Amino acid sequence: MSLLEVDDLTVSYRGPYGGRRAVEGISFALEPGEVVAVVGESGSGKTTTAHALIGLLPSNGTIDRGRILLGGTDIATWSSRRMESVRGARIGLIPQDPSNSLDPVKTVGAQIGEVLRIHRRGDRRTIARRVLDLLARVGLPDPEVRARQYPHELSGGMRQRVLIAIAIALEPELVIADEPTSALDVTVQRRILDLVDDLRAEFGTAVLLVTHDLGVAAGRSDRLVVMRDGGVEEQGGTREVLAAPAAAYTRRLLDDAPALTAREFRTPPDTEPVIVARDLVKEFRVGRRPFRAVDGVSFEVRRGSTHALVGESGSGKTTTARMVARFARPTRGTVTVAGAGADREFRRHVQLVYQDPYGSLDPRQSIAQIVEEPLRNFRLGDGDTRRARVRELVERVALPPDVLGRRPRELSGGQRQRVAIARALAVGPEVVVLDEAVSALDVTVQAQILDLLEELQRDLGLTYLFISHDLAVVRQISHTVSVMKKGRIVEFGTTQQVFTDPRHEYTRELLAAIPEPVR
Image 1 (cartoon, one colour):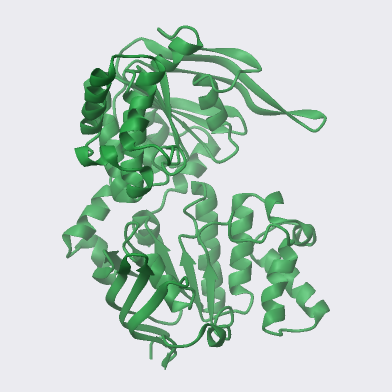
Image 2 (cartoon, rainbow, N blue to C red):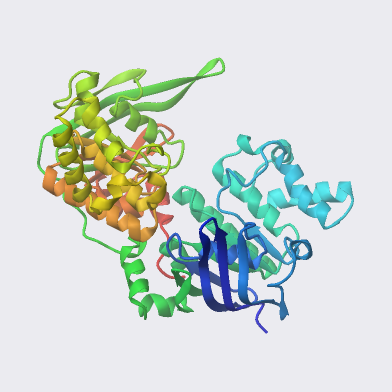
């Protein structure tokens, strides 16, 4: 008997204008101790499936038909109250976002202990000891200290470990991991996935891994379930699906996954430097002592090339990028951008594309107004000229003309990022700073944006400063790389040099953390 069997599951959401099917007749099974990865793009239904299994659909979500057999018992029709006996005890959940999944006003220890108290697993002293054991088990140093801390006092990786501790507190038979590493740096991601593997081996726990990252799924699962538009496109053993995908959609996902696709390295152009950074230092006042976020950083970026700054969160790469874009002033050192003058003229010469396509666009404006705004600010052209320029830019980034009258909320994440790029190009810059500009996107949309950036660079001669923690993406798009750690550059070279002959131990650690294609 399978531990979990999903049979013809169909889920819909009610809305003000009627219902919408999110999952349509899907079936799959999960055996004890097995890892099954459910993969697909945003909107494929994978997270809805995960939430339906554990009875956590939102109030407007309903299971229309189908069975969810847990150890042979159908729990699909169980009430929320009855499902409380299953959650935590038999099925644990590791949610996606460690920043929003923990109560900010409760200590870490109290939140882990709450699971044990709800299920009456011992008295106060027993629970307190178990909390410390769990914190130690998930690899957090100084469990006694961590138990007394609040979520905001922990890093993202530490918070995710706390969520794992909560998920395994009652040693459930099944853990559902819903995009458990999507918000984490590559090395932290590897440690978290290694931890889940260790716990699975120790307790015999089965894992349902929900992810849009084909590299993670390929390296960590026994079987794949590929979802698209609410249905199962194909499923099978991970090695078999990777070796010979039956569905065209699966082949496209694999082709678009940077970690699974080896492209030729890009050769740097033999041109003059456009960006020159020399001995950059940036300090912030934290209490009585200054905190040095960037410490003596120097690099050059050649015209028409892409230079990547890579490193984990806190390495100083975004602060460096903000100094290049003049959104932050160096404490010491200099940045020069060829051809750029005073601040107002500088804004025409250097533009910035942010990470979050959801937060960087004004929700009150139409797409036409968003793209036109820089032209109005710089008083470039009359109304007809600006409108023609907006239409040209929208076409340039491969968006249909009908988006012009829509609002950002009506567009997908990939479409919003295309709008952000169109806006950045409006005033004809020579340099574009891209701060994690593709990290929030699904793999297929990410591939489309990367191809667009290469095309724009080729056609317009753009120079990019590309900020990323994802080395698989950096390998694909950059000509040269600076690897940053704790505010310093520890390695610099062409992308080929850095990836094929890394000299610094930290660079080797980052490269080793790129997901392996197969287990």
